[in-house]
Image: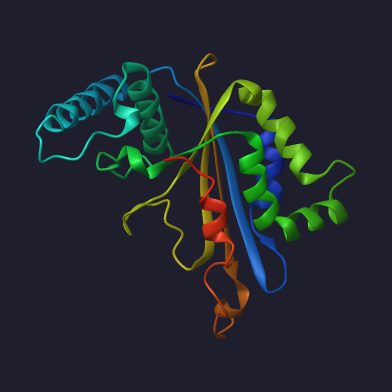
Length: 224
């Protein structure tokens, strides 16, 4: 896989780099990659594929749980491999071989992603309107993603780390999200991770809460 230079994403990264909103700071980053194998990608892909096939074989045991849906077809396994390879290229010094299919949540549509973005990035959107321009933050994000991966043809995944050692775990964050926008035809992936940190904690004050009460309701709409 290869990192793609995208000026439209760079503009958003400049805004999300370290957005101070008074009591809180938002940090976000978007990166684009091609899915064409490069370097050790082919060897790693074969290793991941073999691990997945072994899991399927073990699941035939009556005492074993059924395999995740993403492991059942060659096409879905290839998608999972591309998603994991993307994580490797984001953090090349970390071994993601332990990542499991259930850690990727499938978003049904842009509207589902937009619900999360609107809820958690409300203050950031207001700051964008006041400081950047006449096109909203959400519309700017949509146009930038559409330019790179054609959102109408995309599969949208959320990634949930389950290890404290995972570099996508944002230590000290009030909340954190990791999304991958995958276009099967173009063989491209855009990653978007964004997090919120309390400036009160940094200043020595106690944080009021870790997550908003609406989290369970939002994640209830996701398919695993």
